[in-house]
Image 1: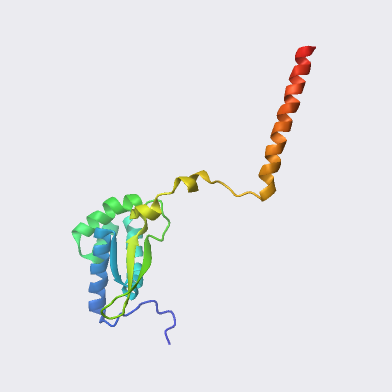
Image 2 (image 1 turned 135 degrees about the vertical axis):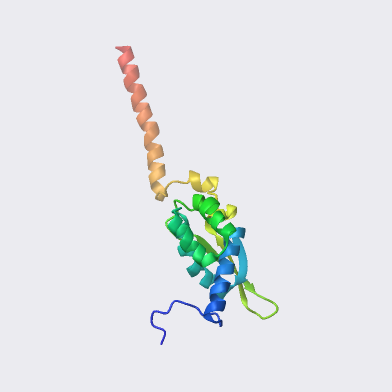
Length: 165
């Protein structure tokens, strides 16, 4: 039984799997999005998200821990520089997996894994979403609009009466 086992072995030895995840993580950090199989993308998300969390706090200790996983100085610079600034306020969920269908050669499911904060299409809030505040019931707006002109008329009549006196 697989009680509590969260690791997908990906049909590889431990050393091969470690090397694969390190290489995929470095490429994801460098390019911000990569295309791979769905199983590798899901395994990569589990591998890279704790590293991205470490990247939010730039200290020598965190740099050494992340370097132990990635073994790539350029990826470390990118992670603790550009990426850490973008994900500083995000509490988690730094990656997004998008299924792309099946590969023609071997019918493997292909997926795109990307860093959420570096996608301009999904990341930027639209003007409509910013303008829309809350949703009201159908009659509430009509009643408020009908009450406003009546209140203005009452205010006009009272000011006219005061000016006539």
